[in-house]
Structures are given as C-alpha cells and as structure tokens.
Image 1 (cartoon, rainbow, N blue to C red):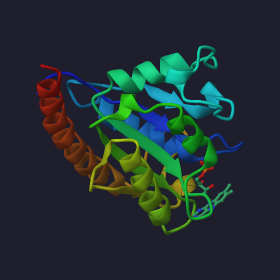
Image 2 (tube, rainbow, N blue to C red; image 1 turned 30 degrees about the vertical axis):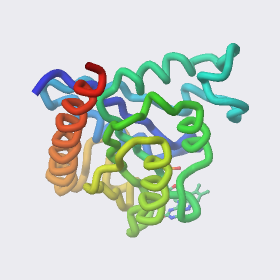
Image 3 (spheres, rainbow, N blue to C red; image 1 turned 45 degrees about the horizontal axis):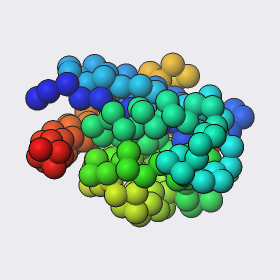
Image 4 (cartoon, rainbow, N blue to C red; image 1 turned 30 degrees about the horizontal axis):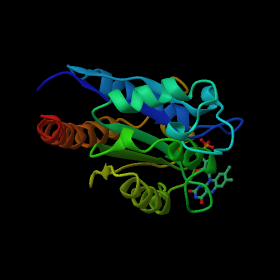
Amino acid sequence: MGGFSIPVIIGSTRRGRQTPRAARFVHGRLKSRDPVESALLDLREYDFPIMEERLRRRDDPPPGLAGFSRHIADGDALVIVSPEYNSGYPGVLKNALDYLLPEYRRKPVGIVTVSAGSLGGASCLAQLRQVILSLGALPIPAKLPVTRVGSSFGEDGEPTDPAYEKRADTFIDELLWYTEALSTQRAGDER
Ligand SMILES: Cc1cc2nc3c(=O)[nH]c(=O)nc-3n(C[C@H](O)[C@H](O)[C@H](O)COP(=O)(O)O)c2cc1C
C-alpha cells in the first residue's frame, strides 16, 4: 500500500459543539495507520461565507478556500464527521462541500455521524450519502455512528467507551480498502 492522504472535515461550527470530540478520535486512529497522513479541516476555522459561486468559477475566492480545495484534491479519500441537525446535515457543511467538484471525483468518503442522543444520526448519514454521490465521490458502505457524544468521548477525543476503538478500526479498514482500490483505478485514468 502506498502513502495515502485522507483529510477529515469537522462539519460542526456550533458554539459549544461536541462533534470535534469524535473528529479528534477518528483523526487520531486514522493517523496511527502507517502510511496514512491526515489533515483535520475545521469548518469553524475556515469560516467560509455563503457560497456565491464554485471555486473554479471565482477569481476572488474567499480566504482559505484554495487551501481547503488543495487538501481535498490531494487527498486519496475523505472523512466527514457531521452532527445530525433536524434529521439532516448542517448547512455549513453543505455550503463548504458545494464550493468544490472535481476535487472529489472517484474518491471514497467515510461518514461519521454524531448525535447527542441514542440514535447516532442515521438520517444525516442517508442524506449525506446522496450528496456525496452527486459530488462524483463514493460513500463507503461502512458507517460509524456516534451516540451520546458528550459522554462517549472526552474533549481530547479519548473514548470513554472502549467499543469505539474496534468500531473505528473496522470503519478505517473498510475506508482503506476502497482508498487503495479507487486510487489504483484513478492512476489508470491519468495514464
Ligand atoms: C439545530 C440542531 C438540531 C439538532 N437535531 C438533531 C437531530 O435531528 N437528531 C439528533 O440526534 N440530534 C440532533 N441535535 C443534537 C446534536 O446531534 C448534538 O448537538 C451533538 O452534540 C452533535 O452536534 P454538535 O457538534 O453541534 O454538538 C441537534 C442539534 C442542533 C443544534
């Protein structure tokens, strides 16, 4: 297996948000896999304005957007850690995803859904999968729902429930399988 780059998007910008706990955890597990490198892309830090036009049609891109695009374009896969809001994904996440398009093409996407209760964000997962297909990427079949995020993880991303370690490792195994398979195929596209 060659070296893979797999950025992780934190899809929550809410004041007092809990999603970074789960994102830090998944990011740490991903980085522990040799030879994976991973950047944590925090939408709160990017603070993108409402999308007026996609990056490739802008000659005045908002600050940070070119760098965000490069992370996704150079990535072999993508992980999105998204809270469930009103049975869907947050608007801020859709806004950021909509800025780009060719950057996602034929890449696998692992989705981690985060909820404060016991349901784990199943509706958010279904909706995000649909969006990802429209972006030309492939949502992987494996899922990693996070329930009761505030008590399941510390702020540093350390799980209080050790079951998450095995779940995350299975999820990452699957993601890496698709990452390797699709990057081999994409290399063939470019020849
Ligand atoms: C506007 C809003 C809507 C929400 N809707 C849902 C929901 O539909 N289902 C759910 O399980 N949790 C819902 N939650 C709770 C979030 O899942 C919870 O806040 C969790 O900590 C993850 O989001 P966070 O990163 O904003 O903390 C909602 C939270 C907010 C702020």
